[in-house]
Length: 125
Image 1 (tube, rainbow, N blue to C red):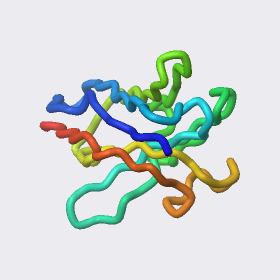
Image 2: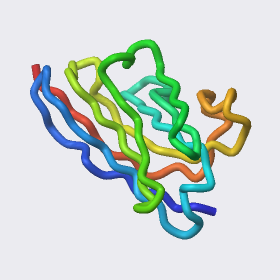
Image 3: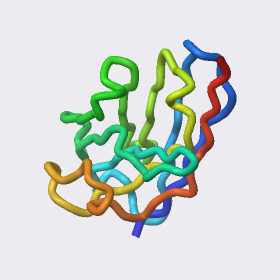
């Protein structure tokens, strides 16, 4: 099983950018399709983006298309989420996870496991 640790969160002004990282240990992340989710207080954890093992295919939630980019570096055992033009609506704890199901299901929370502990993203207006 892969262990995942997120980093890169913090405080940013509206319109700013952050790059989140998700580093794997134990089993390599290069064997999994990977995804990012987020959870704001009082809300359900929601899908943000996912990426195939090769990085050749990605999928995004509608609310982040054109602003966020998911990528991976299998040699570094790390998955990234570049977030641009952040707004207050993007404030949440961001989690990465490994998809344990078929690619076309790697946008449903139930398809993921090995969740990291999350990293907080705060956006000031």
